[in-house]
Image (cartoon, helix red, strand yellow):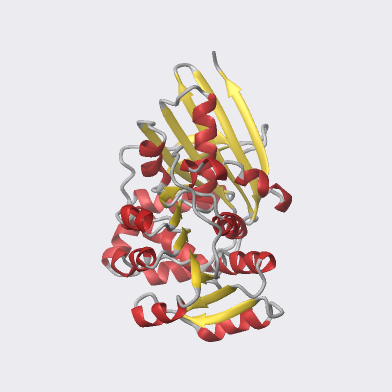
Length: 357
């Protein structure tokens, strides 16, 4: 983990972009509990932002911001010291990172798309120069998976391979942006030669489920930040039937065909209405070295809620200062290693296992 100049305690407001969505509203409300009157909830729909602010008892402030409109962002940044990005920009070109770092404003980014993460990383020098702290891979996957990966890799004595499995509750009312992102990844269809893996969800004794290769960004990040040459991320749903259907359609090329026909909006709308299963989720990391395997896992309910809570916890720590300036992934900052323990009060449970020599 990096040892760089530590940031000072911030002074100003926190702007939560996408703050009334399934993830952003959790982040905004949790931060407002800690810093009442200093959190701005914002998005393209001012009415939705105002509705959430009105229901917060005055702890939240509303604003209208469209990332495609630089003027609206500039206006909202007045008096802001930290931005939590709870919505993915449609393209790297409209990502606000550069504008924030030029003004010395910090960033907590929930982005899960590799190209958008790369866009923020490009401005690392600018962030350090502006003494701004930016945290990437903040959420459940990526995020908690990254922290588990570091723990498992260290426990095995330096991993040669990491298998990261994510189980999502198909019955949860996931936000539209999250479903749209999932559909986009299914449309890619490229698994890089990785194969499905059958492992048990935790706690121990649960039935094994098949997890399918899926392009979460941590499989790219962790090869570099942890120096592990072989990292694969996989996805399964708590509904085995729906998991089989989705990945069967992907193998058959249905999602790629839908992309060519520009049916992504229809698929997103259809999947948003499907609720088969429950709302429990699990993330599991298996670190391999020689004949030894170390497993670390976390379970809880509502992936969207815990993505928001993770972002709020990290943002609160950035606000308090003491973290290194520049752009970092969550697993690179020693002071964030205990984030899972901090979330235990909300119902996050940790599990561990060790097999082999």
